[in-house]
Amino acid sequence: MHQSTYTGPAYTEHSTDIGLVVDEYTVKCITCTPDEFDQNVADFKAALKDAGIEDVIAERQAHFDAAK
Image (cartoon, rainbow, N blue to C red; front, side, top):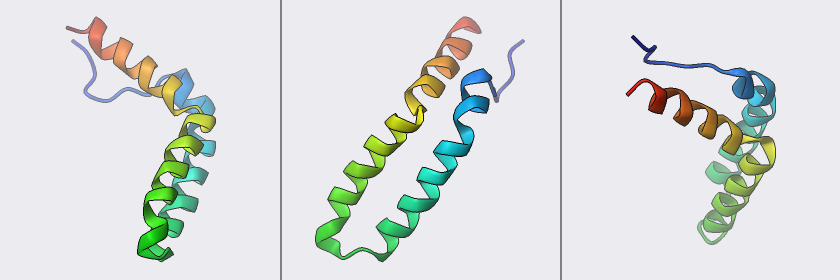
């Protein structure tokens, strides 16, 4: 039986950086003008990639795929 949640080494390694990015861009997206919003979202996605989110997603996907 697999866990319905999973915290692996990649999340542990990158969680602080990811959290800081989320905090920063939450404020930016809430306080920006409507014409800045799309660019802020694009920058947010890029910053998440730089913070290691793709490693976390890949690790979790592999975990849940193995449980099928």
